[in-house]
Each structure stands twice: as structure tokens, then as C-alpha cells.
Length: 323
Image 1 (cartoon, rainbow, N blue to C red):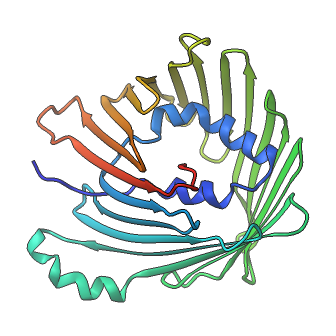
Image 2 (cartoon, rainbow, N blue to C red):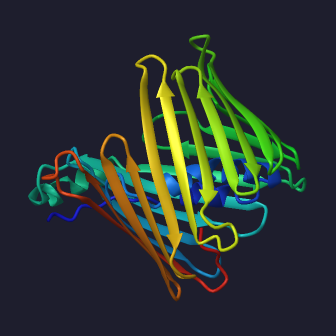
């Protein structure tokens, strides 16, 4: 069986960059994502390998490789520098190439280096702990730098992002609520086309053993509902999640069911199945400073298809928190 590679640590950088966003931002991300994390986090969509190092001095390093179904290879290196509690800098270098066989790998290395994408994000947290400013820029897409402003308080979080351009695409999002009930909206407006490009409304409700969320996407004409519950709230070792998405235009439904079982303090098993025949399993293991994730996905309809296999390894320093 061919061993192909991909990375699944993109959300790691995002969570690190937003670690100081404030209570409401954390409530929104954690409560809204809690349902989908059981279904999708740590599971593999393409075959992957990634290696992440979290040294004690706070500089995170990630190396990754990816083979996709279209014979496209991607390599990426990512690092995050956080010299203090005010400034955080993320740097990413990645390249993509179409390779028909491994024999052509060395032939495209020079082209890959020439076409590599260098992106940088600088986040600054002011003396006011609720305000955060980020500036992002990449070299290959020839797009202007993007500025993001975020402000959060105990019951409110607002986000404004726009590119530094003559006709920017403005994105505004806001969340109001607590860790029990939260409502939010996300709007994107294109000043060049004078059109609303995105409109989403979401809500989240948490009570006792139930965590439910709903999201309506007006432009994509979809509505999604998901919920999470624990089999035994006293032990918290097993939980399950269900997600149902309905598309109005095609009148189609997508259903995904997943479960997570904490075998021990260092071992976790996750499984997922959807109504289109995709089944996946993920095995997570903590071994000293190493965090190992082994995942696989198979399409149960054509059983002759080769399963996708992924491996993620994270090395954590003594003073670092694994995310």
C-alpha cells in the first residue's frame, strides 16, 4: 500500500494565534467547535504526515508533507515566535506541485522552491487585554496585506478584517452571549462588486449534558444542526456527536455521527461515519513529551479503494501546552 502524506495542523496555528482573544471568543470557538471536533478533528481527509515541536522557550515548529488524490504534493514548514505576551509572529513556507510519480519528485524541486509561498502574520495585543491587531501577508498570491482587528469582553466579541486595497472585501463578525447561550453573525461585503458575499448566523446552547449549535448560511443556502452529549456525565470518558446539514437548493441532507472514548488519561479513540459511506478512526496517544495521532479513512462503497492513512507527531517541551 502506498504511503501518502498530508498535514493536519492548520488549526493548531489558528488556536495559538487566538489564545489570548478573551472569554467570549474562547466560548464561541470552544462551544461551537466542540460538536464538530468529535466528528472531524484528528480525522484524516487526505493521507498525511506531520511533525510538530513545542520547545519550552515558546517557539513552535511544524513540518508537514501531503499527497492528495489528484497526485498533488504539498510541503509546508511553519513556525511561531512569541517573544512576550504582546507580540506573536507566524511564518509559513509551503509549495504545491503535481507529480505523476515519485521519479519526477527531484525534477520539480527547483520549481517548487521558486513557486514557494511565504506568508507571515503579526499579532499585537495592546495594553487593553480585549483588543488585538493582526497583519497578514503572503508573497505568491499577489494579494494586499490583510488587517484584522478583534475586540472581546465577557459577553461580547467583535471582529473586523479587510485587505489594504482600493476596493476591499470587508468581513464583520460579532458574538453576544456566555458559555451557556451565545448568538453570532458573520457578514462579508465586496466593495468592488457592491454585493454581499457571505451571510451566516449561528447560535449555541449548553445545558447540563447537552451542547447544541445551529448555523444558517444564507449565501450557500444551507442550515446545519449539531449536538454533543456524554454517555455518562459522571465519568466523562465517552461522548458522541451528531451533525445534520440540509441544502435548500438541492434538497439534500448530510448526516455524520461520531464518538470519542477516553480509554485512559493518555489514550483516546475516535470514530466517525457519515451517510455517504465514509468511515474513519483516529487513535491518539501521549507518550512522555510526544503526542502521536494515527488516523485512517476509507470509502465503504468501493471497498477496493486504498484507505487513507495519516500520522501526526507533536513533541512538547516541559513548559509548553499541547493544543
